[in-house]
Length: 336
Image (cartoon, rainbow, N blue to C red):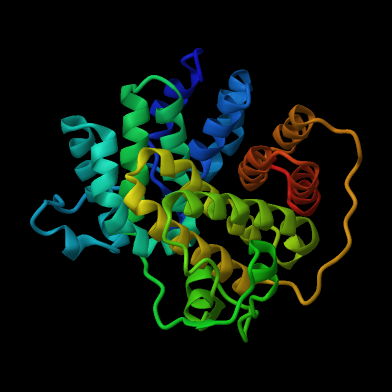
């Protein structure tokens, strides 16, 4: 729980910026600063934003309001992102945020894959903050920004055939077949995903869904240590996207936990298919580092994906996860 006020200050500062730059690259700053504060580095937040500021753009202009009557028309239209954020800002001011989330989560869940899964990750960070501490204006506004970004970038995955998988999440990820052509940006690669292993399809119990989701996050995090060289940035999302869903479950009705698991699995498996390396490599991390020491290394490195992946690795909490975080630092370019 943040008692410094730094997170609220940072969010107010960042809400003057748009959720993307160059029309396609996500603004990771709200997610990264939430992770910094969560792990006790509030004093580093504004300095980190200063370094990241060149990657920020001004908040975009709106076109016309999104309404309860015509929201389907605006769903998945990135040109309407400011309209969507304004819509959710109004909604979150009018009723409890958990009620709003319960209504919109099933509407947005089928389009979890838009924006390279960054919108749902941003929502996951916002929900963690709201569940952990005081419900302040900037934190509610951050949820509105995350939901609005998700609605604007909403993109379903269709035409995927289920193929035999495995019992465990780790084995099911190993069974994912790489797409035929591993080139191009995320949207074009996503269109090539046609076959994914079936995993946890028979799950009907919410508690089992939550257990399986935690298993998936753990497996995807561990796997990065040996497979992250396939694409050091994008393969982070195979773990951070399902972890965002896992963080959100406590705020959702239990009836939404099973479909959340299925969407998270599809996202993790699709990212694995799109960016899988030709072969794994062995990796042995330095021994004896604590979780705090690993996160301090991530902070010194500074890259936004490194910070978010290390945050997820600390959620998993075991030595293999910490090793994966260190591998991410080795593979990724530091923030300069």
